[in-house]
Length: 243
Image (cartoon, rainbow, N blue to C red; front, side, top):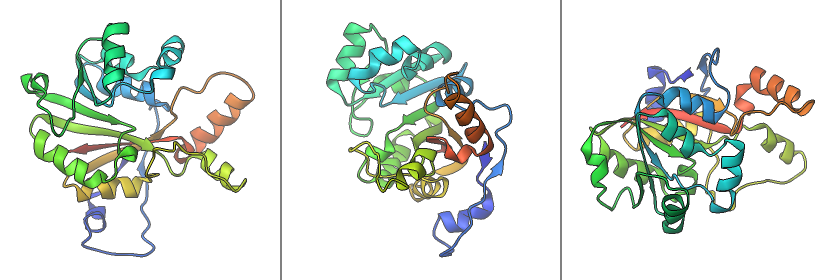
């Protein structure tokens, strides 16, 4: 993990300004999983977690399950206690009725009462690819902090990484490839800024691939070399924060 140093607070909180501020990455990725699934498995193993936006995209859930890439299934398996929350009623119905998943709730995290959250303190609340879909992520995180501070020890946030290798490759072709519902790309500094402006405390961050890099030569060799030497080229940015 890279550390977010206390010296950065003055810029993150708006007390200092620089038009060319250098936000340095200090830390190491040694012995750390390079893909999102294995990184999260290691982080939440033996802990309790609230998975926000647990449904994923319905048409591809079964495909992900077949390949072992459906994230919520991993979280359930590795956490001591895991609940899923999503506003997608059809997705929740599919998970509960078709996949027989337990502890899945259709609810608005900021508006609805979710009694199951009040039954215990939680180690983590995981916002997996959520913030890029929200019109005002600062307001969202502010309200999240006001409602769940004291009940959740730490946030884990994953978002699309603006530095990812494919973005540079597409730029050379004069195009952008993006989920059309996304509002933002994030960098470590801009995500830390959003979290800080919401009154939360960013702690650490890292870069991961969305899925394990499959052993299909020669592409796998190239990816493993590039992503190992230059982690910031990976697709996903992960950041932890306290509420």
